[in-house]
Image (tube, rainbow, N blue to C red; front, side, top):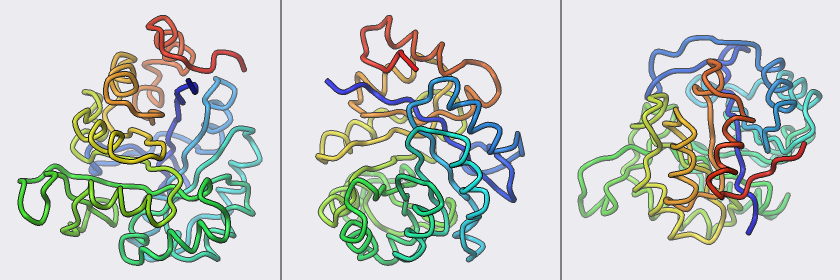
Length: 259
């Protein structure tokens, strides 16, 4: 069995790491370059960097910050926000990222997934999915809808259908973020995560809601996620990556314990 991955997430706005609850009320909490180095030294398996206002502001990603972060860490590094073309992907990869995460732009132009996979390989292309629980309907049979532009625009697209379609188009991984759970520290959206994980053949990263190591155990062992994104619980010093991994290891979940 592959080790389950623990992945800190840096949401970046105006050059600062920021955190909100359910995509609202964001406050700045630190320097992303220093935080990236800290998490690398703590034993994080990967790092995710999101320029959270690039899409909504209709601007390019902050490539200089991406380059500086890449210079501080030696673990896989995924970057998202404002990536709209294959050329944008190339620029991010040349700046030091191993993966690019596409979200809003992929919804608007699904061919971007295929183009990126063809140019750089499926392993480089991560589909970011921001998902909101809604009433079940003929249009949204799963009861979960895709929302884009930082939680601002409801698309009418069913999350389960989109996950399967993205895999067909060539995505190598899915980062599944529950808007309902985001920043609450009350636990991941287990039903959503299990549904997507059991329906696709590519790795699924669970995102949104981690507040206690038990939450990671639940989403990795019970909801079958391949990796778990963390933010608030470590950004604010409540837990360390080492403490989380020690807890999961004691519960019998395979994680990387040597670094």
